Image 1 (cartoon, rainbow, N blue to C red):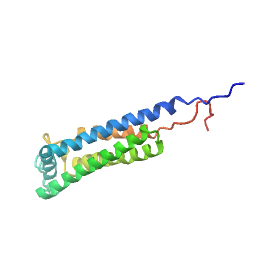
Image 2 (image 1 turned 90 degrees about the horizontal axis):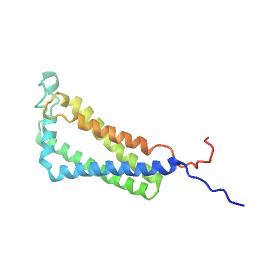
Image 3 (image 1 turned 180 degrees about the vertical axis):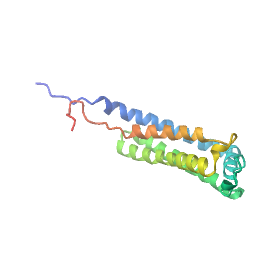
Image 4 (image 1 turned 30 degrees about the horizontal axis):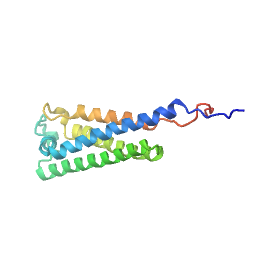
Amino acid sequence: MTTPTTRVSHSARVVPVTATLLTASVALYIALVAFGNITDFGTNQQFVRHVLAMDTTFKDDDLMWRAVTSTGLQDAAYVAIIAWETVAAVVLTAGTWFWARRDHVRGRALSTYGLLMLMLLFGAGFIAIGGEWFAMWQSDTWNGLDAATRVLVFSGIVLLVNHLPFGRPADEPAP
């Protein structure tokens, strides 16, 4: 007599590997972004300063009252962005670690937090606040909306993959 073996469904094998690799990709990306912002501080510092100062927008008097011209406040915002990116990179790296160790509950939780951090930074921070409040969309020179949209979409896709169902044996009936 043979004992029945439980076959593992295709998704139970593929989804965790996919979640691991995609989370690792986002972790690597944001770690490189944070590293670049730290080691080449001045480049994106100028970007943040120009966006907040609104000095390359249409100069509409109805909007210019929103401009932040204090370099101290501009630099504080930039340092906060770098800190947020760095923490997100650490959280996503930890999420990747747990996915790789097959601790799917912790992997999914940490990945969700890290991806949400990026979606808030790039969606609420860069697209909504930078793009609309500070009218970044009006600037030909200092417009980061396309880059922010790419990160938002990338993070969102990875978040969806991280939450795909998996784990039911192939021979177990669906509920």
